[in-house]
Length: 417
Ligand SMILES: [Zn+2]
Image (tube, rainbow, N blue to C red; front, side):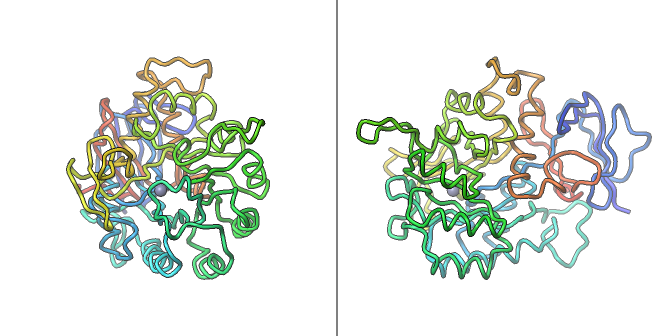
């Protein structure tokens, strides 16, 4: 039998923390959770004394890492990027496909389909238990980002391909890959957006609103048609504006206002500076906030100049810049860093709302919800992922007091023993 005991750590459950407790995993599932010390150490052992044990992080919007891009239709590229994010505590991931033509999109989806079937050690031939150097986050499906976006808010998405949703373009993709597409992001102000949202909703696919110049009525109509997610809130989207003499909310304010909408948050301190992050957290409960990386391929790489898919980017510890260094080219986050930044942005900040007290020794439950349970719920896997609970997948992250990831368990497998 394959077992693992993580003990002597602070265990972060969905509703509360156990100050000193243990988690036993068996055959890839969480088998026991308890207070104090376990009666015996079952199987392998991780001593988490002085550390925090969190549920594995679920990243529902990520473009690559470790020098590899999810835009490349190659299993090697996927394996490299997946391993880079595992080190940051991601145990489940939804690779994002940036705006591209249908042929390229479907070639990438074919690779995603192959990755979806793999066990946590990446090898379909081996039982997925025991320490493994090949350990990888579980690929839950694909996040298709575009190309139905606003030209004005396309951000780093390529110009030539951007345009309104067109059923001749999306229906064949949905017919062939609808079963592995978890999220499709689009701008709700475009003609055909409501029909497209209805089609996604009918198929159980999450519609995300983003790269958008929408006014409040467009957002309202999309939400009515079933849209439930907002792509990286406050990045590449409309805010408060005037239409002639009238004042209108943009997508960002509608995201804060409407409880139906869960917001993606890029917590790198740059895409959302700390006060903007506080503003979001003051308006959205953790159950409506999904921390994402939106990472580009330089995530997990040393600072320097890189060439990715034809673009030169300048990478620092915090963010990637375009060649002119006047705009961001994407985030270099891992989920571990996102959690550290969220806790830091909120440390010492005592908002009137109870649910975001991230001061020292508090707030792990809220942060874990934003990094694990909420994103798991968004893509419909919260029955088996997103929290430390008996029966769920054995996905765990052990962090030290400074917020550094010290060990990762994915499907009961540990990183390298
Ligand atoms: Zn993205």
